View 1 (tube, helix red, strand yellow):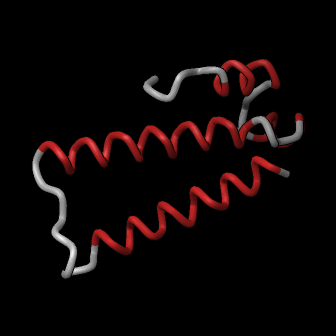
View 2 (view 1 turned 45 degrees about the horizontal axis):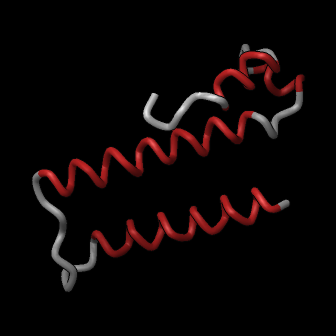
View 3 (view 1 turned 60 degrees about the vertical axis):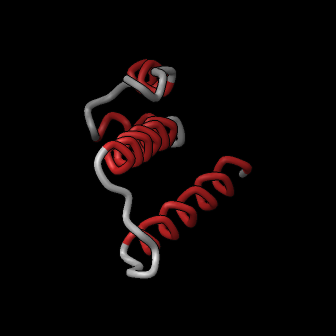
Amino acid sequence: MGSIGTISSVQRLLSLIDSLIGDPRIPAPSGFARAWVNYFFGRYRKQLSRRDLMGLTDEQLADVGLSRADAQAEARKPFWN
């Protein structure tokens, strides 16, 4: 249950960041900063998705064409892959 709380917290943080990006009172990052933010959060979301695979049942994994071993291998990948 700890991971569900963590994922929920991260989702709230990402939602907050998304809302702040559209706030005209806060300057939007540009150039390198924008690219870095997009890269980092894109990779972080990908890592969360990989971890979510581990919460699926074998039947659910089979529905998307994966085995338990495939899901474990995917979840072990570093976030930069």
